[in-house]
Amino acid sequence: MQSMTGFGNAQGKKGKLDVSIEIRSVNHRFFSLKQSVPDALTRYEGDIERFLRQKVGRGSLTLSVSVKALHPPGPVLPEPKIVEEFLRRLRRLQKAAGIHGEVGIDALLGFPHLWNSVESDSHGIESWSIVRSILDRAVEDLVAMRRREGESIRKDIDARLTNVLKLVAQIQERAPVVLETYQKKLEDRIAALLTQRGLEFAKVDLLKEIAVYADKCDVSEELQRLTSHVDQFRKILTGEGPIGRRLDFLTQEMAREANTITSKCGDSKISSHAVEMKAELEKIKEQVENVE
Image 1 (tube, rainbow, N blue to C red):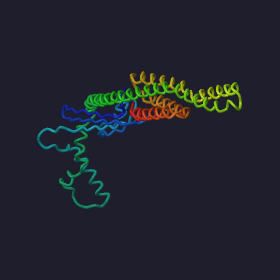
Image 2: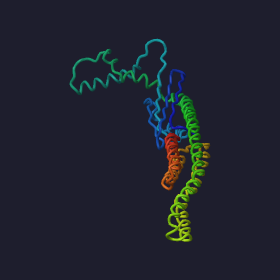
Image 3: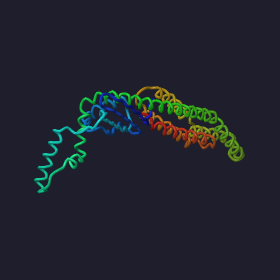
Image 4: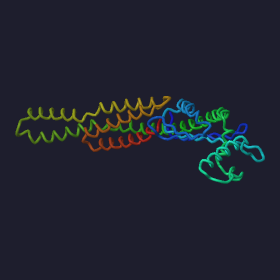
């Protein structure tokens, strides 16, 4: 079981390159990925996404890849051929615009794009294999954190499910008492009618009304379904892969049963237990929203 919240990073140096990768993950209904990679690696964005989809089922991911050149001691200058081509283009532009004067070396070397060519040359195709190996470690770090978060969520949900079952047991224990209390109230009412309508007629009325009330306030089916949903929920919690949507469905079903119990029983104690149950289910729902 994994949470959709996590962070992973990894760094590495090889040859003339220093690579750093960060991956952040937050809640999302589906898989979503935003990438920030050097220009020389944009051609591999599809490969990166396919790899991440194999490791992460759901979540909004943000990937940042930094590749820096480890220059040897001493000055590093642009390649002469690149400078010459840059100068030729500038002169053509100068002529077309009717601008007079010479372009000095100081002005020429002040163009950032000229220096970017140094970086681009260092970050060529050969850097992909390095980035790929470091990406493996960053994703492993992310998945490890998502699993730790998932285990924490699982324990919290399991404890709340235990509370739900305790409340189910309390309602089951209380339900017969509610019927007995209602029967006693009816018997008191019938006693006042004996002199007016006769004993046998009063007994028939009493039994009919008790039967109607018993059927109306019977929550045994709802309690049975709640218990079954909890069992299913716990089985899914121990499974692998994306399980968040199934848990969300079961949470809604349990909340529906709790609402039905509240509406069917007019007993204050049972209503109190049902409200407490709904509060636990609401907290479970909040946790499930972060499960992959």
